[in-house]
Amino acid sequence: MGDFRSDTVTQPTLAMKQAMSDAPLGDDVYGDDPTVNRLQDMAAEMLGFEASLFAPSGTQTNLIALMGHCQRGEEAIVGQQWHTYRWEAGGMAVLGSIQPQPLENQPDGTIALDDIASAIKPDDPHFARTRLIVLENTTGGKVLPLAYMRDVQMLAKKYGLRSHIDGARLMNAAVSIATENSSDPIKEAKNICNSYDSVSLCLSKGLGAPIGSLLFGSSSFVAQAKRTRKMLGGGMRQAGILAAAGIYALENNVQRLTDDHANASMLSNGLKEIIRTHARLNESSTVVHPAHTNILFMDVASDVASVFLPYLAENNIRVTSGIQKSKDGPVRRIRWVTHLNVNQSDVERALTVVARF
Ligand SMILES: *Cc1c(COP(=O)(O)O)cnc(C)c1O
Image (cartoon, rainbow, N blue to C red; front, side):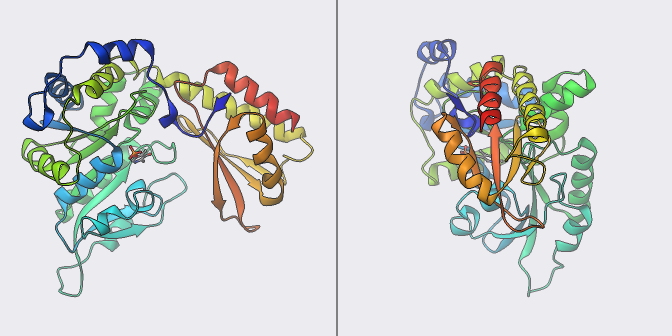
């Protein structure tokens, strides 16, 4: 079995479950769950924020943040591919009455500074008031360069915009930069977030917790966020049982993301090797994109993909796929994600199965 659909499929380990069952609990809606409080305090300290808030999902922490920054009829600048825009069921518009202003993503995952600057509306009654710039890091597995993060921050300051990072996979970005600089991932995570008004971080992806996301910001922002979380139905009672998994994840599972990145590289290199000589998955039908962090994309011509995808499923290799535009018409974009529950031998087996197709 190789489940490459997403790093959300990770199961809590025995040690994590032990930490969950040992956790002291209270009622977090009353603010007296000691384990939730401990998670929120240690995480805020870790990333250099005044406070953080534990919530059930990243979709919710993002929505809470957007609603904290924008009032009804105000506007948030987002990337076309951002999760906040494309993958959250339109929540900012439906529940926040916030107008998204989507911008084209560049091949490196960024949205261009010029595009951002020219999307900011002047103060004119025709326009929604532009209030917020949202970034996503990593995005599609790509790490946004630190220099870019700084440039966007400067632009936000210049125009008086608030700034939010959807850091569902922030730690993958931090570990990737830390590996390059031979530095500490937590220090790099702090660097990425430096000066941003808010950040969301998923505990339930590569970090391996079963449920949970954190929202970071100033004390007053997080106080308001707590009210919005309640409004959205995200106030949880003995939530320490989940927060304990989050503490365990932050203490034990950050550095190990390098293993996931190494496995994704190995998978990408192996797939590139295969398509050099394969009869059907060859250079005219298939493009294997480089692995950035723990995610890799492979574009396969539709006719080949319609046989290849069921073949993978029959062989217990699970992936996700979507339609992608290309210069030769639509192709299937297959996504492979590495995580805590796929190891090197799962990657080797997947490569063997693909080669045999
Ligand atoms: C997964 C993800 C989220 C949040 O997803 P949930 O499943 O709601 O926790 C937010 N942003 C990005 C970029 C993600 O990949």
